[in-house]
Length: 162
Image (cartoon, rainbow, N blue to C red):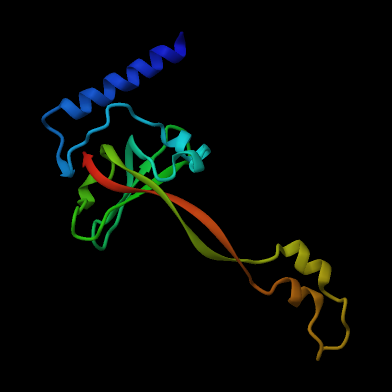
């Protein structure tokens, strides 16, 4: 029962935000009626990839250079998702930070390369293994930067109300 009350409350809040005339609209008109929780997208990103979603949340960050993205806080602590738009098509103002937003867009992913380093414990474990200073120690070998890729999920913003 509690789940139904929360769902209905979320829908009413979304409708109120969409219908409120005081929100500033950006990009295309919002067409979806049902919101998807940011935490649900982040928990099951493959399920939502390529799908159009309607999300809402507090804007915790805005692109300072071109206003080409906003970062929305999730319904769960310490989670957020970035909403990226084509440069110049929509420009989010810096003043939007701290405001509530409803955004419609498509979930997509891309790969980013990141360097990983060993922990201090791994480094200390390898120290002293080689006495010859001309040879590379295991500590140095373990601490060479290893490149890995990570899949990142974002929303390609189509329309927003802030």
